[in-house]
Image 1: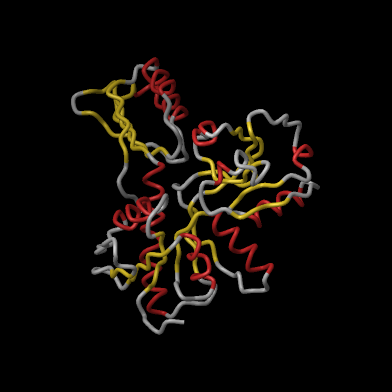
Image 2: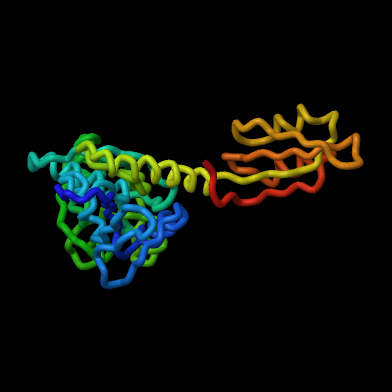
Length: 298
């Protein structure tokens, strides 16, 4: 364990989650001097250090207490936890909060010509994958036996060159599968990014920093999912207008200068605000309907 009182956070050095993680930390007000070659960056306005490593290393660094926090995909986190449990290595951690980026799914894919007739038709087949533990767990849960070969990259070519019958890999849009003559047949794990924390209690100094940082992270996440809605509504239609507002927030009702028949309605919506909702509000006599993004919220 490090003796420093600075909170240490592990993040992906480069790749799918790196940009989203950097954006999150910056929106939380952290001033970080990141360069491509520096693996350890210091936050100048808070007692926080950022360790930039491979995504696959992040869970172990947190589980071993080398880093206090880590931002990592659930797929990598779960694969590492299963592997360490199998090897009787400590796999304890705390999932502090789920994040609203890095969404993907781990799927089984077969050549387009394969006659897929349900999960049982995959029994006894061989899959190329970077996630053998998740693959084997899914197979056990569904009463089938599969083999695997480990590939760190170019998994999609494995069936065409005879290395495997199919693949088990991350899928976002499915375009890469289609380009390589593959079709998705089973989703075995859905993933997003998570903020995880070491299971070892933090010292008071680090805990104080975390108590400041965590509400900021949660505020950024909430703001990203929320919209600020403003409109003018007929005073005698407030009940109907309020019932159409998404989310659980109570609307704020304000008088309009020089108008006795209209009021201003403001509300923060944490659910999707559809065009159909705007059209229904318009039909009730509402006007000046504005839907705006929110940068921060606490």
